[in-house]
Image (cartoon, rainbow, N blue to C red; front, side):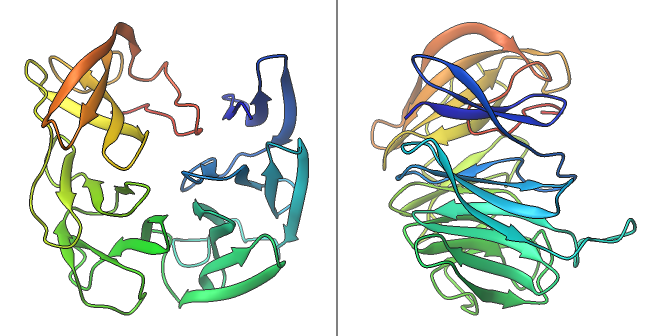
Length: 259
């Protein structure tokens, strides 16, 4: 179905083997510019000018949902910002004035997942499992239940679940780490020769693509693209000198600027 990406001006594009077409606009000030699931054709973003959440079907090449929201105030904070947070299958997760909500694309139905939650509460969703801020704000809780007290893994704010939700990558240290979600066991693949690594996206239940930086992690630092496997315990070079931090954008629309 191709992939969806954004430009610095907020334009949203769908790139396929035949063409690159403009499909929308987003200048969201917080959260992910775009969210796409591990499976399925949907991608979601927030059209700031129209104050509307959008869902696009990359297989059908058409918009399938447009959910209008009350305009947010110019001084909106983390509890009332309108923001895209995640997408899992046919459910988009957004932050609205009600808190964190889940929107069922197929049935055009919105349900509150966590009333009053901030924009930082939800890190990722996969296979019906939420990776979210824990009660102590210094770790992540991994559970389908938004009120569960565990299991807990180290990390704050950022989390990326494997498609089956068995593993979760978080920013527990300066460099990203991978944990077994059920036990909290550190299963981070070795990336020898790199001082900093950060996952871009899981490619299957065991493997993910990452960037690796040999020295530092600031703006302008050159990086390599790595393929990492939890079962094999290591990362292999996929593309040397692929770019520099600040000038690279992953095809899911998440900028790597700022390391």
